[in-house]
Each structure stands twice: as structure tokens, then as C-alpha cells.
Amino acid sequence: MWARGDGSLLALLISHGHPDHCGLADLVAPGVRVLAGAATVRIAEEAAFFGGASRVLAAEGRFRSGQAFEIGPFSIRPVVVDHSAFDAYALVIEAGGRRLVYSGDLRAHGRKPGTMSRFACAARGADALLLEGTRMGADGTRPLV
Image (cartoon, rainbow, N blue to C red):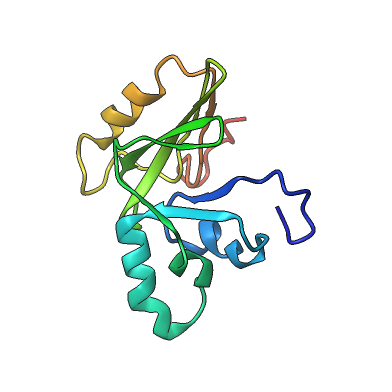
């Protein structure tokens, strides 16, 4: 992934604009495609005055919920999710008859009712699920794992 990479990285997909998801994007080798949500790129453009996120600003692809696209052998379908960052996505990635679902950061209690059920439908039957987990339990509860 880094500048000394072997060249096999086809693209960097940014699920949303929080620094823990795109803050190291500038370390990805030049020439690697960068894709993010259309509004995420617009927000980064407006915030550019404050510095950072130059690879997000250079994102060549601007995806929208439900609009699948291809990268090499992969078919990727973004699914909008509710999160404190506007324009946050889960990603459904298919290749070789297999399906991986990456949740991105999501919540079930925010301003976008219905996104959790759409995410659950997109994730149903996946071969693998990568599920983000911040604040999974209340303070003082036992860890889930």
C-alpha cells in the first residue's frame, strides 16, 4: 500500500471523511486510484483551507449509494449508512463468485432511519463481513469478545 508497494494495489476506497478512514491516504503510492463519495469529496474541497486530505481532494471516482462500479476483477456497490460523518458508506465487494461486505462506520440510532435495514439486506448471505465497532457496549459492560 505504501510508496514502496509492489504495484498490486488497484485503488483506495474511502468510506467517509473522518481522519481514521482517510487520514493516511497521502501515503498511498502515486498512481493508485482514489475513490470516495461525491459529497465526501465536496466537503474535503470546502475544508481544504484547513489543510490535509489532499488525496481525498484528488479522488477521481465519486461514488453514490447503489451505483456499482468495477475496479479490475472487483465489482463494488456502495451502500449509504448512518454515521456522524455525512456521506458515509458500507461497501459490497464481489469477485470470483464471492462477496465481502465492509460496514464502514455505522449506527442504528441516527438521522437516517432505514439505512440499517438496507445495510442488513446488502450484507445478507455475504461470504465475509468486516464490521467496524466503536462504542459497541455501554461503559462498564464486559467486552463482547
